[in-house]
Length: 82
Image (tube, rainbow, N blue to C red; front, side, top):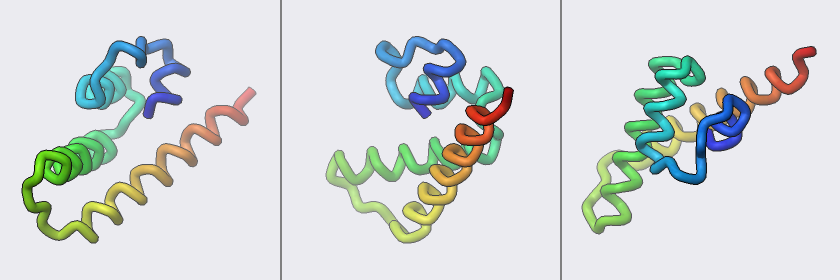
């Protein structure tokens, strides 16, 4: 997501991940489904790092994998456009 933010000139060095996700969505760089997936993955990450139990981790991992694949495909396609 930071690569995409840099491409659209968002100040990534100063943005917290949650703000970066919202900025990318508001700029139209993330679809609503991607926005929801990113926030869901971030919530799971936050529960884990703060010592709380994360339920159904396999679903979250699959959601993250799908999100990353979509973003990489979009980034790759945008780089090959003239």
